[in-house]
Length: 546
Image 1 (tube, rainbow, N blue to C red):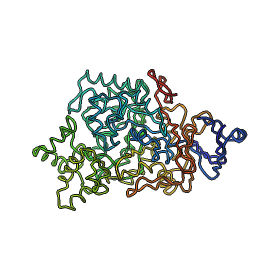
Image 2: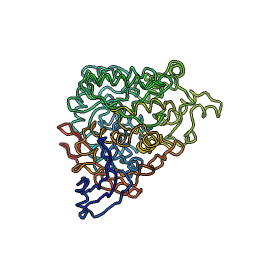
Image 3: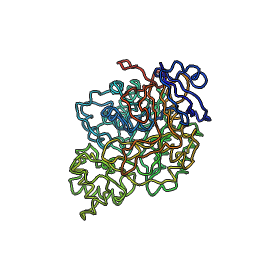
Image 4: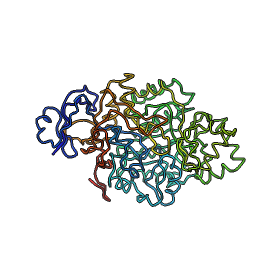
C-alpha cells in the first residue's frame, strides 16, 4: 500500500511551471503523478490532503558538515525539518575518510570545532567505502561524499608546509581514485586550512585530472574570500580548465571590506569561463556572516607541523610577535588576507566548559570586559580550548549575496556547523530562508526557479540517477511546504529553531517529518558514484546496503 499526496501544487524541480496534481508514493518510489495517481488512489493506504501546499523534490544541501552528526544524533532535525533529503559531505578538504591511525587523532582535534569529537572508539572506519557503509546502517537523509584533499595530503605528506614531490602527488592521485571507486562523487579542498593550503596549482590540477577521469567534480574552498578573492576564484577556474574537471565553487561569496559590491566581477569571470566550455556550478548560503574555527585565522606557517607545533609557537615570544603582526598588520592568509577585525569575530562554540561565558560574544567584547588586548584574548582562548573554538565572522555584503544567488548555475548549500552553543543559524534555516525571505518576500526569483536551484540543478551536478525531480519512477524524496508561510525561524540569538511551514518530508518514501513532527524513520542511504559516473544508492566491491 502507498501514500497519496492529494491536491497539491507540484513544483517539479525542472524550473517548469507549477501545476495541480496528486502524487502517489509506493515503497521508496514515486509511482504516479497527475491523473494516473488519482486513478490509482484506491491503492493508497494513506491519503494526505495537501491542497494549498507545494509538493517539491527534497532539497539538496550541496555543502554540509553533517559528517558525524548524521551518526551521533540520528534524528538530524536541523536538516530534515528544512526539507533537506540529500547532503554532500566531506567538505573543505577535511573529513574522516580515508584516514589511518596516525592522521585520525590529529584530524579529530583539527576539526572538532566543525563536528565535535565523539571519541576514538567511535571511528570504526578508515576508508571511504567503510564510512559509506557506516552511513548505510541508518541515517535520516541521503548523503554523498567528497574525497577531502587536505586529509589525503596529510596521509601522504604529513602536516608540514612544503610542496609535494612528484611521487607524492601520484600517491595522492591514487588515493583520490580509490575513494571515488569506493563511491565518492568528487574532491573537496580547503585552501585556507592546513594542510590543504600548502598545495600549489599543479598539485590540485593533477588530482583534479584523476577526478575528471571518473566523471566527478572538484569543490574547492579556495584561497581567499577576502583580499585577492577574485584572483583565488580565477585560480580555481584555471585548475578546472587545465585538468578537464568539472568545478563546483563552494560557498561562492565575496566577503570582507575589499569585496563590497564586487559580485558583478565574479559573475563576469565565471560567465567567461562557461562560455569557453568550463563546466562550473556554485553554491551559496543566504546569510551575511561566515563561520569557521578560531584557529583557522592563524597564518599558515604557524600551523605547519600540526596543532602541537602551533601550540608551541603560540607560547614562543618571537613567534607570537610574528603571528600578531600577520593578524593585525599584514593580514593572515588564514584570515583571507585581511587584518583581523576583533569586533567581527564572535565565539559560537567551545569545547572547554570553563569558556562557556565567551559564547555569543566577540573577541573585542571579551577583551574589553577585562581591559585585555584582543590578540592576547584570542591566543588565550585558543590555548585553553585546545583549538576547538568555533566562530562567526560578521563580514558579508547583502548586495553580493543577492547577486550571486541569482546566477543560473547557482545551487543551495548551508555550510552549516551543527556543534557549539550558538552555531550559525544557516544550519537550521538555509532552505526555508531561500523560499520565504528571498523568493516570497523579496521576489528575487519565481518559486519554480527557486525550487530548481535547490533541487534539480543540484541533482544534475551530483549526477543523481533517480532523484531531484517529481517524476514517476524516481525516488520518493519529497517535501511539502506552505508557500505562504514557509520561513526560517532560526536566529543568531536562538539558532536551533525548526523552520515553519514545512509539514511533511519524505525520504525514500518514508515520512521523516509528519504533520510537522519528526518521526523515528531512518530511511536515508549513502549515495555512491557508480562505474558509469552516475550517483545512486548501491554497493561497492566490499559490501554496502542496497
